[in-house]
Length: 191
Image (tube, rainbow, N blue to C red):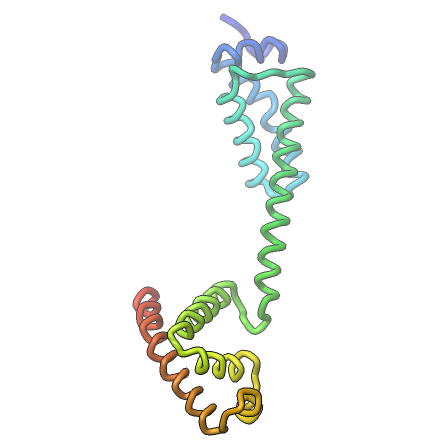
């Protein structure tokens, strides 16, 4: 019987390429703890470190037939885990930057859920506006999006104040109608 603990890394790699499970187990036992400690020191998370090292060993078994170790097995494994750590850190940075951007979009919102809900409402308002005549839509947008007064809109569009008021009223009634169906569906889903 072969004593795997006494075999060199090179011998274990050769056996691993042939699908020898005890050789794989010996490589795992030899390097798992040192790789986890190294990875944890870079990620500051034992769970993430264990996951990365587990992925490394899963990949090592899956790709065993194509395994080429140019230097030492230890250097090879540390090279893989170093690249995995760099990838994980990059993903975390991108994820954090994206979350920060979402949080900074509107400080009035206290959570990402509220931000997403508000975006959904804004999308439905925009979609509701598409059903309005161009003049009514323009007046609504000047009033609500550009925050112009009725008098400013009337002067800009060469209309009477009452016409502007009427058009805003028509737009709001139309939006209430189109959004009420969305809110009805929304409340049905979440209540």
